[in-house]
Length: 339
Image 1 (tube, rainbow, N blue to C red):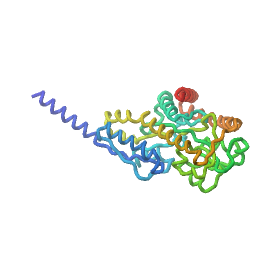
Image 2: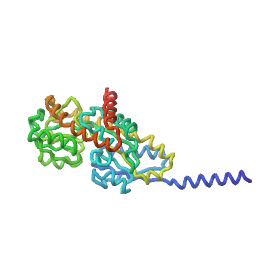
Image 3: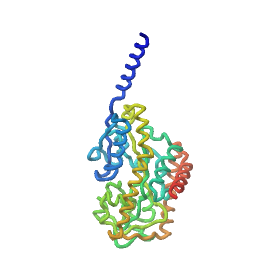
Image 4: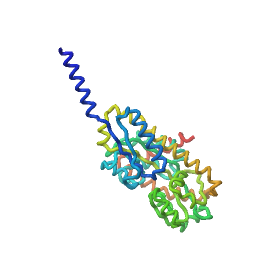
């Protein structure tokens, strides 16, 4: 009788545990244009894998249009407006410092997957718990932003930058361009077409090949300036609402982590790299010249970057991160993995 009773109690306990973690549906936001590969490939692939590894207990969908502007992705997840989203780390520097290690000028390389792995390893060692208001699912770093001229005159020297009207990504690139005498117009990348297509500027700095295509600015681009180092790279964080994450059973959480982290990060990085390289391969037929930067221009940009990196080190150190150690580790791993 006791065995029967014990078995009944155990069965009831198992059913109660299963009921406590009912099937979960995720709303995953994508702030890029609907045709961008993050919206069509990266996030759908992740959702398919999540559904597979949880045997259908967790599934989701992507709204046809972004429910929040680029700077508000993290906030929209924290507030529960959406369950998960990708945040450009450059827009949340007042909230987190660690991921910006991958956005320090000349710290990266042309290898997006190498930088992504290096950032994930750096996070694990130096700032594993910095995202304390959301569940961090993944991070990735994309191909370097480049310098492009929209006129028949390439931008190759320090003198070319002086009084140049240029679109830039907000943050370090704006500061660097301005310090060289350029007049910078800064917007998020998704708004770059609004500035570039109207002829407000004569050059743009910060987009890679994939962005030229995604934001439809190829028709306005005449040449690309090639540097020895990676002037600037951008990183992203993929996050989930903490309450939504708590709805998922520990077993399914573990399964989701297996298909998130470096797995989805490396997929995103490789997609960016493949698309960018494909666009660059088309430059000859598109009539876009590739011209080398004068060494003095690259050195001037490096000099302009020094106070930017020093400021990041101060901010990250104040946040409790061994910033110099993180930067040294990241750049070393990027170099090793890019070889």
